Image 1: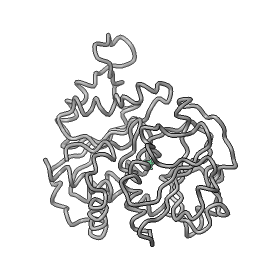
Image 2 (image 1 turned 180 degrees about the horizontal axis):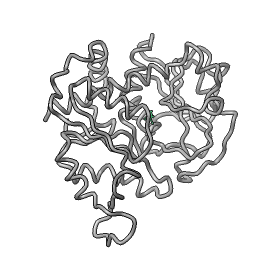
Image 3 (image 1 turned 180 degrees about the vertical axis):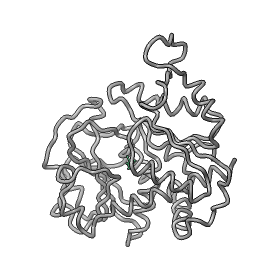
Image 4 (image 1 turned 45 degrees about the vertical axis):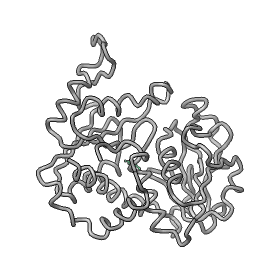
Length: 312
Ligand code: CP
């Protein structure tokens, strides 16, 4: 595998899940694979789980991770072609990506969307510029439109925790005070579409994700109808896609409560705002898988790095 920038880079999700479970059972089994190899982690945005779990995954494979907070610590990077760089950007992506490629065998990038310019965000100009101008493989650690390491993690976590051959999985929008991206929701939808699950999405009107992502997945605007017989409730806020980047309503009625989800397992990628997105009673209960999910971030990243290292 050359790059991992989308859930669509997964050729067979079931075999990936089984391989991730083997890695989890014996995380140091491939300690020699990454010897003398360097993973560069470039962050344009904040992170806790992605930053630490991807470094941990690299260390488990014997790699040397090096990390940079690009926003703030590096020179401002210009992505436009032919730009007269007499503004705030001091270095072009053509040089930056080529230079970092000399220090690293794999480059992982986190770059969120603007949520103000739909066309630019959907062009994935940051991630795709790294793919274009770097000479080494690129891994997305969350881009403008996708979070494929999270989506793979979530697929692994559902597979580990299901007691049914075909569980009912519900992705539910929930309220938030900030304008948030669609990336986690998009990658979760794409991952569930590859799995043998009874999958539906529920969100208020005006909050449908991109139809190019949701395709034929049923969308309910009635949350309680969607939750009927749910085995897993995956919760995430996202801003409006149609009225791009806008918060249309902060409706407490959509907050996840124990009463609403019953015995269903609760999932969230974290970080989560307690008592805004989900009430304490859910997160404090045995139904919550959020800590287990965060643990699986390491093994999802380790699987991706292993596949790339094997192809170098
Ligand atoms: N879930 C996730 O990506 O967490 P971080 O933003 O903390 O990396």
